[in-house]
Length: 342
Image (cartoon, rainbow, N blue to C red; front, side, top):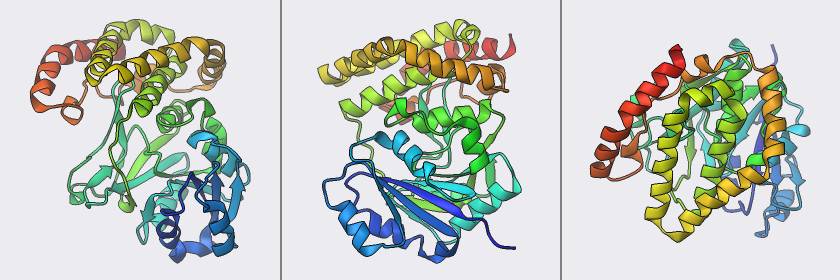
């Protein structure tokens, strides 16, 4: 039986230095792959180099920086594959990873598969991602030994750096929401996978290497916080927001305090995020209406997959993490328990 075609979608932005390793890592499975690269207005010669060196690759020029979410949507719109492999340009795919993810997708219709993603030093970058009910996310296993994770297990969120799904699942959820531009778009689409009756699993025996560097600029902080609020505004039922209000308010206080601590640029980025949400209320209502009409999973089912605490140890110093956890975790756990069981 002939293997189904997999369309690899890579969104590039000044990625000429990253793409050679990424593309070379896909050569062993080239017979089942269609590679589509969407260029978001690169100025480093990425397009010219690709057209010269890789005549079999589809190169789409957006002509401007369309963002990660819309860039992937553009790529999928011309894809011929039965399955889509969403992949960052600064990754390398280990031998056997594509086949492992594809087998899981074909044997489990409706499943979305994210691999074990490793950092340059060989430690874990992500084995799927977890989410607090306020929208704050953390990578599962970050910094741990890669040997700590094996087999296949459920995870709430994919990592946007690498995941595979069928065309049917993509079409059902409607792809990425371009409103996110960049960051948290993988959170939004992952939650919608669950709300629409699908599931997300991590294939820990499928390995992708990611040239990941943690760098939280004020610009990144703006998109992370703005888009976190966008996720909540789109995906929760209003009754859930009312039940979670105390925990959500505590989280807003924590993130605002963090912004103040980091300085004026971060504080203004936080306020700018609030302003964007207010300015796009009508657009958010339209997106929210579609999700609420079509969802099949209740918020209780969704919240059961979320963490009732914030992993402060991954976000700040040990001493401050202990203080914050002592003060906020009882509130979070109580609010979460009531929201799930009421």
